[in-house]
Image (cartoon, rainbow, N blue to C red; front, top):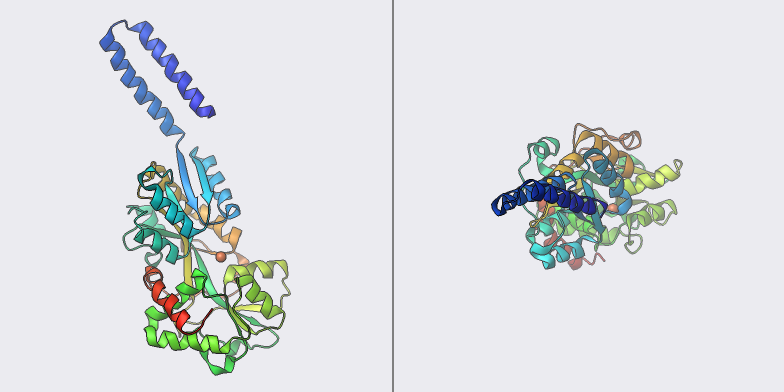
Length: 356
Ligand code: FE
């Protein structure tokens, strides 16, 4: 508002100057156009980007503040779940104030693309900073952080040598020892979608059925509960995103649960992303791209690594020490848009085998 008042004052002053210097109608009109252009230029200097984000406020705010401090570009944002945000973007259509859609999981980004609320962008910066498998093939979205869906195990009961792959958790030796999060969460839908991509539907189904047969208890509502159930002795092994384990490990370095990164003998570690795309009807696509490009830069990627214990998407940036201590990440290199494409098949598959 402060800025707006200033602009209006400036326009008035310029108008007055124009009028006093030139009496003629035509002259006045010409000056008027110039003034409008000038106002536009001033406005361009205090641009604003509007972000619809399903990432939590405390994870995005520090980035936005840093970006504004560096560029003067202001950022307005709202946060909600990914599904409702996509619905909202669709309903608002060309009237949407949003320039950027930001969310976790390639499945959600894929959905936004399918719903037609994003646009393709050309950016050498993003092409250089973000590996191909973490980008939409049509450049409608780009990964900004990488999250690994890893195994966690009870250090008192499980020898890490017993562990190998997600597929192996279907083996009868894990009967009554496995804990999982609900199949309703997109993270597990994407994991199963990638199993389908890798093995075909029939084999993927037998793997997931094996998991269900091995469950020690009903699936939990979130990853933190899976780690805590292992710590409490309810089960011995589980599948969670590494940063959930990382938070608990940070709180209690002596936790009797450890993280295991599945080997490359299977499909490597299932990774997913958080990412962003420019909305189809963005009012300020240039500044929006500037923000996404900055988020892929070294300094922003270092912030990401420290703030949420995620892996940087930009491979020239290292993870923080705590994350490095978990071992080398051999990530599955399949393009993550597969996770979106096969998501409906994954949901049906999990339903068929009784994975709640
Ligand atoms: Fe999460």
